Image 1 (cartoon, one colour):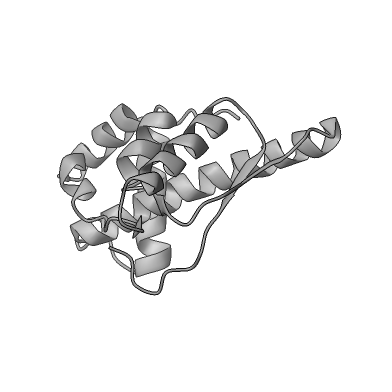
Image 2 (spheres, one colour):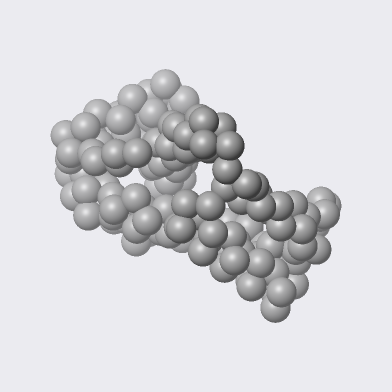
Length: 148
Protein backbone atom coordinates (compact mmCIF):
# COMPACT_ATOMS: atom_id res chain seq x y z
CA UNK A 1 0.00 0.00 0.00
CA UNK A 2 1.30 3.40 -0.95
CA UNK A 3 0.80 5.91 1.85
CA UNK A 4 2.37 8.87 0.06
CA UNK A 5 0.65 12.17 0.68
CA UNK A 6 1.73 15.64 -0.39
CA UNK A 7 1.36 18.68 1.84
CA UNK A 8 -1.32 20.04 -0.49
CA UNK A 9 -3.28 16.76 -0.39
CA UNK A 10 -2.96 16.63 3.40
CA UNK A 11 -4.33 20.17 3.73
CA UNK A 12 -7.26 19.34 1.44
CA UNK A 13 -8.05 16.22 3.45
CA UNK A 14 -7.89 18.14 6.73
CA UNK A 15 -10.21 20.88 5.46
CA UNK A 16 -12.59 18.23 4.08
CA UNK A 17 -12.73 16.28 7.37
CA UNK A 18 -13.20 19.44 9.45
CA UNK A 19 -16.03 20.60 7.21
CA UNK A 20 -17.74 17.26 6.62
CA UNK A 21 -17.58 15.77 10.12
CA UNK A 22 -17.56 18.83 12.37
CA UNK A 23 -19.02 21.64 10.26
CA UNK A 24 -16.15 24.00 11.03
CA UNK A 25 -13.61 25.89 8.98
CA UNK A 26 -9.89 25.60 9.78
CA UNK A 27 -10.09 29.01 11.48
CA UNK A 28 -12.95 27.88 13.76
CA UNK A 29 -11.56 24.42 14.54
CA UNK A 30 -10.14 23.55 17.94
CA UNK A 31 -7.16 21.31 18.60
CA UNK A 32 -9.65 18.54 19.37
CA UNK A 33 -11.21 18.98 15.91
CA UNK A 34 -7.80 18.84 14.25
CA UNK A 35 -6.83 15.75 16.27
CA UNK A 36 -10.00 13.93 15.23
CA UNK A 37 -9.64 15.03 11.59
CA UNK A 38 -6.08 13.68 11.41
CA UNK A 39 -7.18 10.46 13.13
CA UNK A 40 -9.95 10.01 10.54
CA UNK A 41 -7.52 10.59 7.67
CA UNK A 42 -5.12 7.98 9.05
CA UNK A 43 -7.96 5.54 9.71
CA UNK A 44 -9.17 5.86 6.12
CA UNK A 45 -5.67 5.24 4.78
CA UNK A 46 -5.07 2.26 7.05
CA UNK A 47 -8.46 0.73 6.26
CA UNK A 48 -7.62 0.82 2.56
CA UNK A 49 -4.30 -0.88 3.35
CA UNK A 50 -6.07 -3.45 5.52
CA UNK A 51 -8.51 -4.23 2.73
CA UNK A 52 -5.69 -4.77 0.24
CA UNK A 53 -3.75 -6.91 2.74
CA UNK A 54 -6.79 -9.10 3.44
CA UNK A 55 -7.41 -9.59 -0.28
CA UNK A 56 -3.79 -10.69 -0.76
CA UNK A 57 -3.97 -13.01 2.26
CA UNK A 58 -7.11 -14.66 0.87
CA UNK A 59 -5.46 -15.20 -2.51
CA UNK A 60 -2.36 -16.76 -0.98
CA UNK A 61 -4.32 -18.99 1.43
CA UNK A 62 -1.80 -18.07 4.12
CA UNK A 63 -2.01 -19.23 7.71
CA UNK A 64 -3.54 -16.94 10.29
CA UNK A 65 -2.37 -16.17 13.80
CA UNK A 66 -4.85 -15.48 16.60
CA UNK A 67 -3.41 -14.09 19.82
CA UNK A 68 -5.53 -14.29 22.97
CA UNK A 69 -4.50 -12.17 25.93
CA UNK A 70 -6.28 -10.83 28.98
CA UNK A 71 -5.21 -7.28 28.17
CA UNK A 72 -3.59 -5.09 25.53
CA UNK A 73 -1.89 -1.81 26.35
CA UNK A 74 -1.71 -0.24 22.91
CA UNK A 75 -1.04 3.25 24.19
CA UNK A 76 -1.69 6.34 22.13
CA UNK A 77 -1.82 5.70 18.42
CA UNK A 78 -1.69 9.04 16.57
CA UNK A 79 2.05 9.59 16.88
CA UNK A 80 2.79 5.91 16.28
CA UNK A 81 0.60 5.72 13.17
CA UNK A 82 1.97 8.94 11.66
CA UNK A 83 5.49 7.60 12.14
CA UNK A 84 4.72 4.13 10.77
CA UNK A 85 3.02 5.58 7.69
CA UNK A 86 5.93 8.01 7.21
CA UNK A 87 3.55 10.97 7.34
CA UNK A 88 4.81 12.88 10.39
CA UNK A 89 6.68 15.59 8.47
CA UNK A 90 3.92 15.98 5.87
CA UNK A 91 1.18 16.44 8.49
CA UNK A 92 3.38 18.66 10.63
CA UNK A 93 4.01 20.93 7.64
CA UNK A 94 0.34 20.98 6.60
CA UNK A 95 -0.84 21.76 10.13
CA UNK A 96 1.74 24.52 10.48
CA UNK A 97 -0.01 26.39 7.66
CA UNK A 98 -3.16 26.35 9.82
CA UNK A 99 -1.20 27.59 12.86
CA UNK A 100 -1.48 24.20 14.59
CA UNK A 101 1.39 22.38 16.31
CA UNK A 102 1.37 18.62 15.82
CA UNK A 103 2.90 18.05 19.26
CA UNK A 104 -0.17 19.65 20.87
CA UNK A 105 -2.46 17.26 18.98
CA UNK A 106 -0.75 14.30 20.62
CA UNK A 107 -1.99 15.58 23.99
CA UNK A 108 -5.62 15.48 22.79
CA UNK A 109 -5.56 11.69 22.47
CA UNK A 110 -6.73 9.69 25.47
CA UNK A 111 -4.63 6.68 26.44
CA UNK A 112 -6.34 3.50 25.26
CA UNK A 113 -5.35 1.55 28.36
CA UNK A 114 -7.02 -1.86 28.46
CA UNK A 115 -5.53 -3.49 31.52
CA UNK A 116 -2.93 -2.62 34.09
CA UNK A 117 0.44 -3.10 32.40
CA UNK A 118 3.07 -5.79 32.15
CA UNK A 119 1.69 -8.46 29.88
CA UNK A 120 -0.64 -5.98 28.20
CA UNK A 121 2.29 -3.96 26.88
CA UNK A 122 4.07 -7.15 25.81
CA UNK A 123 0.95 -8.31 23.94
CA UNK A 124 0.80 -4.98 22.11
CA UNK A 125 4.47 -5.33 21.14
CA UNK A 126 3.84 -8.84 19.80
CA UNK A 127 1.01 -7.55 17.62
CA UNK A 128 3.10 -4.60 16.41
CA UNK A 129 5.89 -6.99 15.48
CA UNK A 130 3.57 -9.35 13.63
CA UNK A 131 1.93 -6.49 11.75
CA UNK A 132 5.22 -4.88 10.77
CA UNK A 133 6.43 -8.20 9.34
CA UNK A 134 3.28 -8.68 7.28
CA UNK A 135 1.77 -11.62 9.17
CA UNK A 136 -1.98 -12.15 9.11
CA UNK A 137 -2.62 -11.82 12.86
CA UNK A 138 -5.47 -10.74 15.13
CA UNK A 139 -5.48 -10.07 18.84
CA UNK A 140 -8.41 -10.95 21.08
CA UNK A 141 -9.03 -9.88 24.65
CA UNK A 142 -11.72 -9.55 27.25
CA UNK A 143 -13.89 -6.44 27.19
CA UNK A 144 -13.09 -4.03 30.02
CA UNK A 145 -15.88 -1.73 31.01
CA UNK A 146 -13.37 0.55 32.72
CA UNK A 147 -9.73 0.54 31.58
CA UNK A 148 -6.92 2.43 33.26
